[in-house]
Image (cartoon, rainbow, N blue to C red):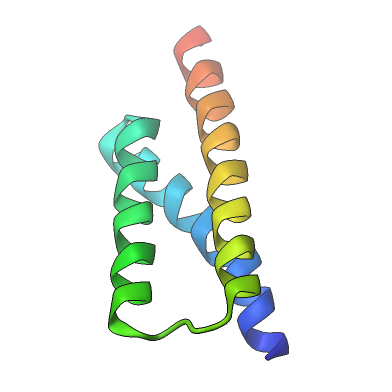
Length: 76
């Protein structure tokens, strides 16, 4: 359970930033990460609502960070 909590806090954040770097668009990165999370929920890999809340929190924080990262890259 502890490993799932740690991964739920870190993995969506990293995926949003990875997809944002590849696509150069933070909306696309967030949408791809959300699609992966929803697919894993539908397949039944996550059955705990607490983990889902942590995933969504990490997704939102990743979106905010990716937006700031993109804004800094455009200023240079």
